Structure formats: C-alpha cells, structure tokens
Length: 372
Image 1 (cartoon, one colour):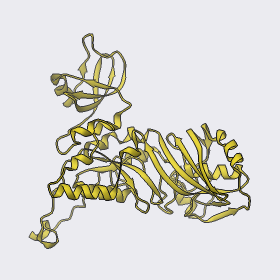
Image 2: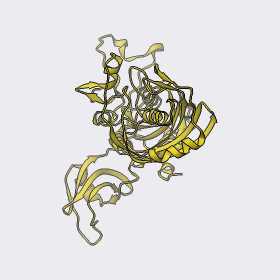
Image 3: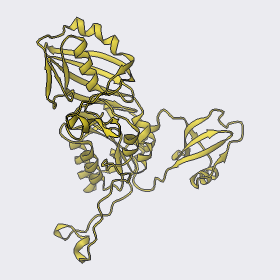
C-alpha cells in the first residue's frame, strides 16, 4: 500500500528496496535514522521543561507490535508519531504505508520489533476496495484528475467472467503516480511535472479476487488477497478498460498484513483510552502490545541453552550438536527459556546470529503471547 506524497493517492503495496529499509523507522523522510525527537541546543536552564513547568519525559524502551485500525484522513507517518507519543517510546516504525484515503490494518513496530518489519512487509495483504465505473483518473483513484469517461456500465455477469484473468501471476503496469524510479527519478515526480511516464509491466501475484457486492451500476466492491508489489489502483484501472468502461478506486480498507488480521486491530480511540487508564494506574500499556516474535510466525523457532544464548548474544556462532540438533538450514528465530533472543541462519552445522534482540523494557503481557 503506497501513498504518493504529491497526490495522496490510493495504491496497492509499493515495495521497492528503499521502502523496505525505510519502513524500519518511523521517520519516512528518506534518511536511514530511527525516528527521534529533533535535538535543540539551548543553554537556557528552562529548556528541559515543557509548558506549565512540567519536566520533559524521557523516552523509554518499548518492544512489540500494535496493529492500528487506521482511520481515514490520517497518514501512516502521523499514526506512527501518535503511537510513539502514547507509549513514550524511543523507536517506532510501520510495516507498509497505508495512505490517508484508506482505513484498516497498519502494523506499527515499537523498539526491537522494528528489526522484524521486513518479514511483515513480505507477507500477503488483503484489501476490500470499491471501484467506481465510468471514469479513469490520472492517479487511478478518487483524488486524481479525470482523463477519460464512459457511459457504459459492466453487468455482474461480465465482472464475474473477468475475475479469473486477474488471478494468479499476472503482468501489471504500475500507476504513473507511483514511487518507481525512471532514470533515477520517481514516477510521480515526472507525472506531476507533466511528463509522459511509461512504466514497464512486471509480474505480481493475486491469490484471490472476488466480487463482494454491487450496490448499483456505478460501483462494485471487491476483495483481493495479493503478494508483494501489487497495486490495487492498477487493478481497478485495468478491469475498467477490459470491461469496456473505465474505473478508479473510490474506497479502500486493508484487512490483512502478513500475520496480522482484523482480530489484531485496535481503533485509535480504544488505544488512547487504554493509555489513559494505564496512566492512572488502572491498567498496563503492555496489554496493547503483541510480542515481537508475532511477526515471525512463518519462521521456525529454535530453543538453545543459556550457555549457547550467551555466545549468540555476543554475536558468536554456536555449533549444532547432539541428536536433537536441527538438520534443516535457513532462517530461524532463536529463543532461550521461552524468550526471543535472535534471528539467525542455520547451516554447515552451526547457528550464525544475524540480528540480536535486547528486550529490556516494556514488552507484551504474558497473555498476548497466545494468539486469539
């Protein structure tokens, strides 16, 4: 799911390498530093106090996932900033942009969970979206300029007959207003400047595409479950053209991101209420967190002894030995006494740590370790 910074357009999920790296952090402005409060040099002794002579709260270590049910009108960056403030957390980032015109699941990683963001971004996504027929727009969504119109409207039979053509691995031309680079420039920058942007088709996988509802002749509601790099905007555009009319996205909700579904989502008002109760001593912010390892559901877990854990924590490899040693190879997440320790590679008879976790601070409540 991507947001065009120039137009706020609704898209599918844009996942070039820069975005994968960038989304490990809350500050999505293009640098590679975790989101932090800007530093100010001030010799005034009052500088460490806020209005009302209240001391500035020090940021704290908070580790885990919060799956926000993002409301329409809020950017993903704003959502991260809000959660970082509510938890008073040092680090935060999200796993896949959801633009202001869309609602639904926005997984936000706090603290050490930011190290697991790529595993969520590589997972499947599910969207429910509404296509408005009869108009094609330059951004392929409701925010864009109308570029073509048609009086034709597709029948339900025609729509149902079309769906198999958009299921499986298909070739898709990304929207002109997307973050894909063309000769070093972002496509949306070129399009905004009036240049004709020709993007090459690329393969994407759509696992499921169904017609959910057709409230009237002008609109159709769909559900799509797709893989990395799919643009829902392009899907609406292409279906409209083949059906002999035009189409653009006019509503969108994300209901699945990797291991996180609607059961994991929490609306912002409920989260704020929980934080207020925790501040008054009536609850704990840990109740809102999901464990860091929730993002690693599809990765095998490997338990080690405390002695081996100490070596791995220092970044040293550990030899696999004994009849219980795993015979498989690849990525695993390592635990010690039931606690997440590291992401590692298993191969050639040893465990090689790649990312070590330091979960000192606020983590998910014990009950959150069991998925509902």
